[in-house]
Length: 295
Image (cartoon, rainbow, N blue to C red):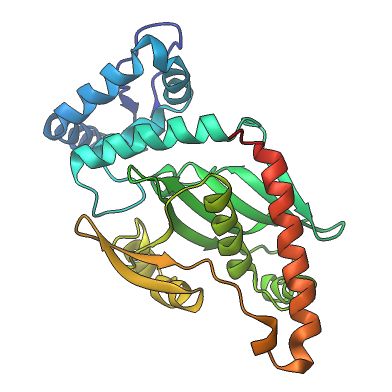
């Protein structure tokens, strides 16, 4: 989907997609569906336009003008399928404002930690599906993204982890690469590492809690099932200290920030855990320096 050009200096108006497809009937139905959504969610479209055209929100207007496809989230879905229409567009606006305020290094992504010359941890934009969040932690192998955790900032001042995604490449065996990285992280698997980094971000920014999206409310989980791949979000959150809770009728997994006590760990594994904890502390220090949040 391509959107007709927006000029940043002009008054913001909700962009119209320029649908492309070899079949004219497909273009027609996509355009019809878009117009139907725009009518159905007209109050939310107006709220987005009004907010972005306020003088104090020039940074928001610039963001959405440069990424017109992101505007579609206001009339479709964003991070959590259980969001109501007004809640969705308000979260969309709040999330972008918070992200641009906290991540001063944008539009460049920031390298947070280097495990060696091949493996690195980054914080920056999610360049894939905006519905699943604009911001992401990513693990890279020789500049290839191998794992990613997308997130957004919620109206209740929480960090919502909206997507955990792995990648496959023809050039190498991703399972072997993940095993190598797990060893370099002293037994901590890539997904667990990304979740730990998200918890660090929550603490540094002094947010209320780190939440995992409920499996039924993850944006693309059903499409994944239909296409033959599936991420078991419930299993991931529970394995990483998740507790099922409700916030304003929305279901989430609250991810607890507690760390294992070394005395409770079998003696033969304590050395590994000491190295793991030291690595995580170094990552947190680097992340804190990157964000440079002033009290």
